[in-house]
Length: 435
Image (cartoon, rainbow, N blue to C red; front, top):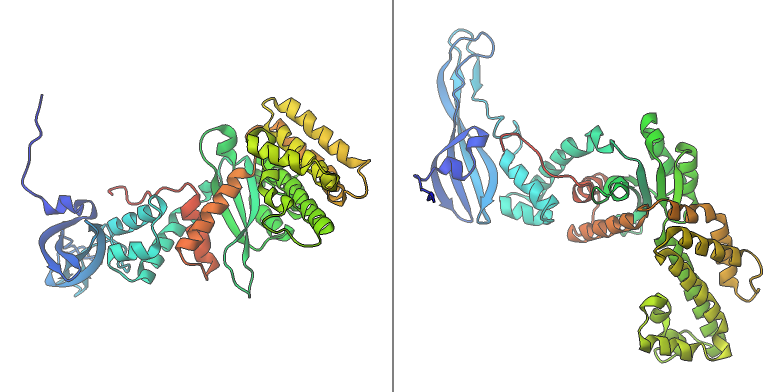
């Protein structure tokens, strides 16, 4: 068996400067940071104007934040040689674009480290700035500019999309200004079984016009390729999709369908609570104590919960709650049935039973029946298209809420969009090929 051998330390390789075209020639520790003195590895003595060989004309220093080592901020002190052309008197510097762009204060390795920290490790921008030893605004501007360049401005991120989900999201909590955005999710990987859902875009506002304008801005070939649009019960999204992608099938996912039934059950419970006891639910009231149990699927109830419901429904005063609870459980059972055709039949039966003949006292079920009848085609379309659900859209919404909390809120919708895409678009940093 061969044994690993050691070689003399190479500071340039260890700090990954060789991929930046730099060579480390010294190091020192300052208060709270390490400083590496570097030279540009390749000389650049040829005049840009006439091609003549220049003569040395002093040096200038350029400071760049570098990726930290051991979480100690590292700064590169790059000595850049200047040259002067003896013929044209033109003065130029060595090319450092391999190490960094002309003006930014972060090296390419620092920028890659920052993107990986935010996208992969989900660190906050403040933590990234601390690791780089720069101001938070400096780190934020550099990361977002690179994110826009490699992600938002990349038209290929819309390629291959056949299934999309749409929902609303609160991007800021303020009394003034629009606090909602419309999020568009690519559900194609979920439907094909090739990976997780990913965020396509966020658009300010939540309305039919917002979603319609976003769809209209996409190329016609792209819109023709969209086969399914998963959405909640908001009719504006359905109308926008019908006008811009008429061949796509709208699907109302189980999450929102069951939520409609759950809201009807809660409304009925509160109404009966008020009618029977004359006040809102208190902790010792039977209906209030059973509010969580009522929202639990029948197949998941424990023996204690089953006994609680049996006792609750024993009296005549709770018969309306029992009837509404029964419809809720029938909808849950239809979605959970392992045989999709049979599940579709069960859902059709629920919609038919609510369409006519519902007692006038069950106002919540009457309203639910009108909604289910109006959206019946969208609800039943779920059973014909396995893997099509707006559930992953809700999951990405939760990730964006976590991002907003980590960032302590956003004030700029552009920055919010860029950070959201970095967080949830499935993007992975791929910068300079040498890195």
